[in-house]
Length: 329
Image (cartoon, rainbow, N blue to C red; front, top):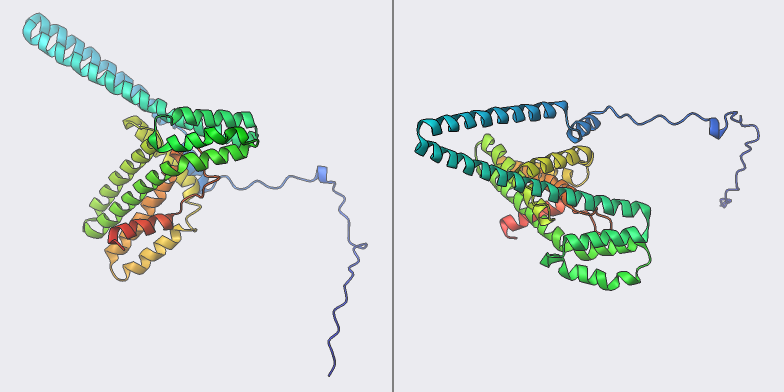
């Protein structure tokens, strides 16, 4: 019986291989990735303001001026004919203008709050890129000023204040800020997402009309986005809610369409299996998974700092908790 000899090392002679005459510095650049795909086009169209927006703004301003001039002429003419009735109408118009001004001030305050959250997020991103300890301290100071009145973040801010003097690395300070301050807000935001997914799944399974399913899902998703913004300190108004929803859809198009194959496909597959038992129940699970995906995109947009030290929640975990709360097991 012969024994197998160990394989000897093989020497490959590369002396005869053709050498490239092109120098690395003179080599042509690699081709760019295609930027005209459907996902990129949708993301750009959702992220940029179209020229039609300016047209609608000018049209609305012109319409408001015409209505205002007509109301003024009507009030002055009525005062000339009947002073008592004219005074009553003028008082009601003045009250309406005061309410409109109050509404405008609230909307401006809400938009300012949303811009403050955006600036805070940009400050954290810049501190991550610069690795400057001073920038990290400034980012934490901004978070402390923004959340100093919140009971959920009081304990975490106090812990970071006690230990920030011992940290000599900017990334460590930013990680500590995220770990100590964000968990309470993240739990509240995830509770909103789970509740919305549960409501959408239940409505889809119970309501027999497809049009009502779409309407209920739309209302629940809009309310969920607004509440997530309020959890993180956004307080979106009517115009702010539209701006926030637009940002969430842009984020969802840019990332969600590409990430549909990870944990979202598991929830959809689960809905397909359940649809063999009950078609409406399977559709409810799928709609709940899509609602959870929108909710997680809203968390990414509304959160004042990106997920780095803490793990990003997944759709499968949200759906599992939502369905557990639905059936009580």
